[in-house]
Length: 307
Image 1: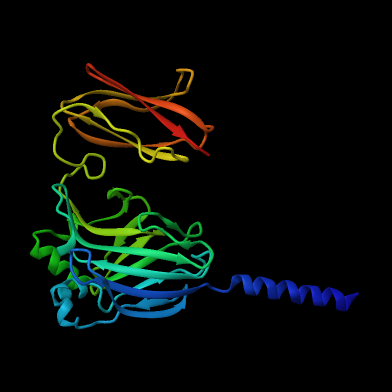
Image 2: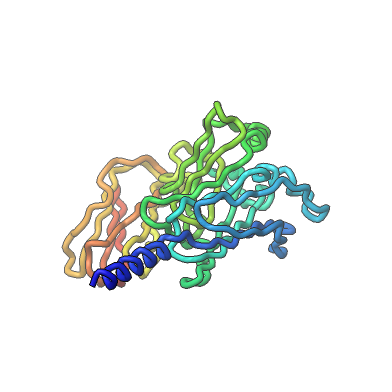
């Protein structure tokens, strides 16, 4: 009996040891050959396990890519790191560096760097670039950048450290600052760290508009209430509206019976473009309506929750 118990304990310990082993990561860094959809060039690749740094070597880019040398130098000598226990499976990690020269112009957002971090999971397969590849709860990854090179570029463009903002891009290039942060320690001036709680498309730069995410773009000339996106949705979606002048905004959710079930906005707001997130985690599948009322403007639209 004692021998049987000992064998069971050994098997149990061995099982937990196997489960606790860090997952494998195949790491690849690419850069586009031009800004017009040309093929991406693989700069280098490596492999390892979560819990270690994946180094990005200092490189002199070939003549074909020399236009992007100053951009690459921000990454050269840095790294990408994942805490052990971050992943749920073995993955291939593709980091595509997207130079500022290839960034679309925006009146309200200045991009300094942008990168697409795409994951191909051993079990889950390829993940679309705008989707969020979530980590295990409480875990995060980091991107270590060359701080002097980064700050030189910021200063060249007329910005300072105080102007820096980090964000994810959600579908449709909508900035999302949730789950991303940065850290710079003057006592360790070589490195600038970006911390993230999932992989997707990431940018670092500055919001010209001081209201940042909530109100972005030119002042509108008309009232509007846009179709929520995504639609159908589960359980979160975004509702966008515009105000040409200041007004007291009421944005509410109604069920199929016409009963108000949630109030999303109930405040005075200045003229601008607004996006509000709606979380329907506590609601059942079905058709719902959202209604905006501000000054003399009233608009109602329909949305579909599918769980």
